[in-house]
Length: 237
Image (cartoon, rainbow, N blue to C red; front, side):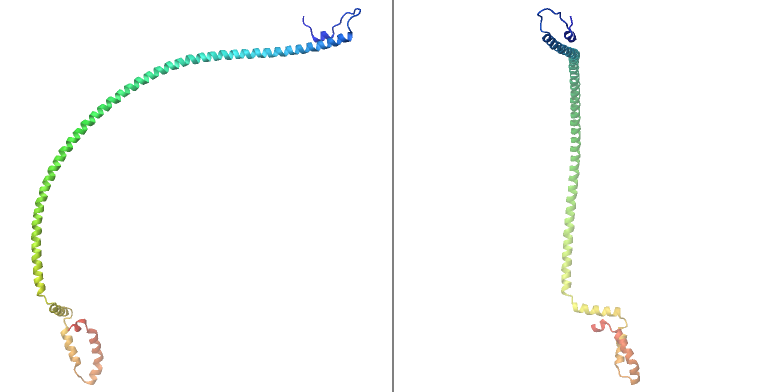
């Protein structure tokens, strides 16, 4: 039986002799109705909270289920990934081993080819060096021959030079520089002034006494001509 606060406040009791105090009963009923109303409000609030809690629990259960599924999927995926990684690692290792073997074989072949090529080049270099040594030996012999010929020519040239020096010394002892200088001056003057003898005779003629009239007319002109024609070789005599 559900009792509301309003029913409590409106509850009426039968009157009997020597019953309870009416005011006290009414006050108590009023207090009881208020407390009952408060309890109903609390119950409603608790119900609301309970329903909210139920919804949260349902959500959490859904999340839990989702997490479980996710974890299960992750576990399965992890196992698959690990298995796939192991297979991939094995495949990579096999490929790496195959590549390493291939590179090793290739390196061995290259080393073998390099050694053979080096041996071939070394043999060629030895042959070329032997040929060069032979050529150098022939050149050395040729140079020795040229050296002997050159020494003979130098000795002959030295003897001729010494002979020429001796003859030059002998000629230098018989050389008269004053005589050669005077001869050179005369020959040079003759070559430069072939009419020098004629000029000398004209000068001598001008120095003779003449008539006064002729002397006054001709002396300045002849003096000027004599001054112009005078040269360095006149002083040499």
